[in-house]
Image (tube, rainbow, N blue to C red; front, side):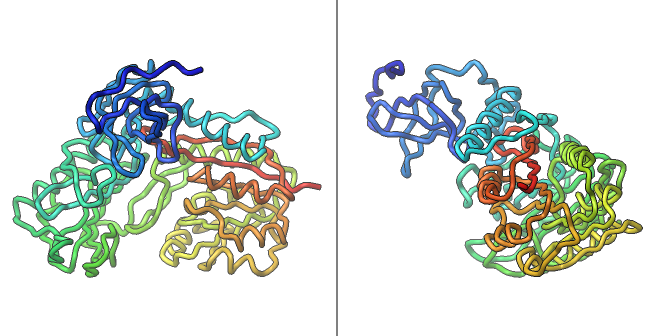
Length: 441
């Protein structure tokens, strides 16, 4: 029997809640003294907390009555309001263990068990690890990230511990200059144009710094970026659609290099202004090294098919281990940068949807690598894989909950040989999974 909850608060909206577990969003959940159940952000399993009941079965933390031994003081002054982090109140070693436990439970629920090695997690620097941040310019002059759970509110930031300090300093300086120049900021409600986002992108291993101004069509003075230390590239991403709120647009280079560079396993990658790149390069390098090591253990390494290949990270890092490599990516701009990154290597790239390209037999490949978006593999891709039965599959997942469901769907013809977690996202509940599947005899 669990311990009884403390006496109920006399305030009708307050509840006492014993936190039992995390939900998929990283919120603590548990029963209340009134018999209900609430999800409460910024709590930890094992804690007893006083919360204000909100709608949709969510509570707002008011007081921690019985704290967890792994609760710590957050490093950032904005934590608890800014939507960028969810777990700064948890000791980093405990964060890693919590993520491991969650994925182990999910493996067990799906009756999946790696054959060769017990599941472990590769850590990350807990702070200053991100290579990109999309800061919002709000119509009233605020500059920062959205408030947790509120798309209509922005937290005016003066620090962000997820970024290297010098990158945050650059972002704040650009904002100071924009305000001093009296430049307009977009007002979504009134649909008036202006600056929308400042996207800063950093080569963690090279020091390159790209600055992207997302705006409606407008002239931007060079004084916004002139003299900024470390900046190697400046773009304007023009977005003239007043109905959307994307940190994206048609690129126009204003100054500097056409891309910024990142180095992974001694390979230089050119990253364009709209290109996706792994957000934590230090961990991305560990991921690439792990895949190389596991592939090296295979007896047969003829052809590699890299689906959802992006700008070619895995294709390039694995090219010397295979006779031939083909990358498939549905974004033509990403394919452009992939071809630049693969110059001189035996790699071909195809701009096509994975499900369309797999509709034809691809028997020249003995290893399939997939790195799909958070939604996982398209059902037609799963059916095509089951129909073609590649000898080996490497599944890279930024959403292990969904990725493991895909692996379970492949289980009738594939066994889970090994798997490892990589903590791409400290201070959040998210984690990356790499799994190796081998075709059953």
